Image (cartoon, rainbow, N blue to C red; front, top):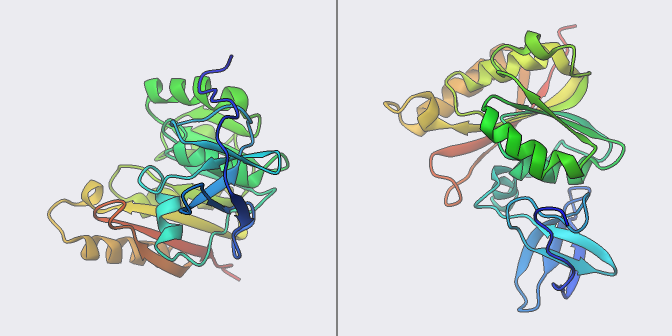
Length: 244
C-alpha cells in the first residue's frame, strides 16, 4: 500500500469546475463549506495529508491555501492561471511537492512538470512520496541559479513557476525562461520578500523584482498579495514578450 493512502471513506456533496481555470475545481463539503480542489492524478494517494474526496466516482484532492501559494493566490482573487492541461511546466523550487503535485493534477497525462530542487533530503521525499506515483513529474536535483547544468534534462516549456527562497528570485526565473520558455510563454513567481531583503519593506522588494522582470522583457499581468495565507508574499503572473 503506497504511503499516503487514504482510501475512499471521504465524500463530498458536489464538485464543480472552476469557472475560469481548467482542471481546478470547487468542492462543496458535507457542512456546506467550499474548498479548492484538483482531480487526483494518482488516485488513492495524497502528498501533504490533504483530504481526498469523491464525487461521481472521481477522486479529488482538496487544495490547501495555507500550504500552497498558488491556491492562496486563487483565493485572493488571481484572475490568470496560465498553467493549463497538456502544458509543460518548469517548476523551480519544487520542495517536497505540495504545489507541484497540484500542477501535476492540472497538466494531466499529456502535460509534464520538470521539478527543480536543490536540497537532497527534500528531493528524496519528492521522489518517494510524489513522483513515484506521478509519471508526469520529473524530479531534478539542481541549483535553479545555474540552469545550464540541467538544460539537457528539460525541454521547452509553456510556463515557468518559481518559488525559491533566494535573493534575486526574478533574475533566476528570467535566466531559466531564457533557456526553456517558449516564445510568448508565461511565468508565475511567488516572491518571498524576506528572502530577498529583510531590511526593505515588502512593497519595495516587490517593486524591484517587478522591474527586473520588465527589463527582461516580461509584461506583468497581475500582482496578488497572499496575506493572510503567507506573510510578506506576493504572486506575480507575467507573459514573455517577443523581442521582434
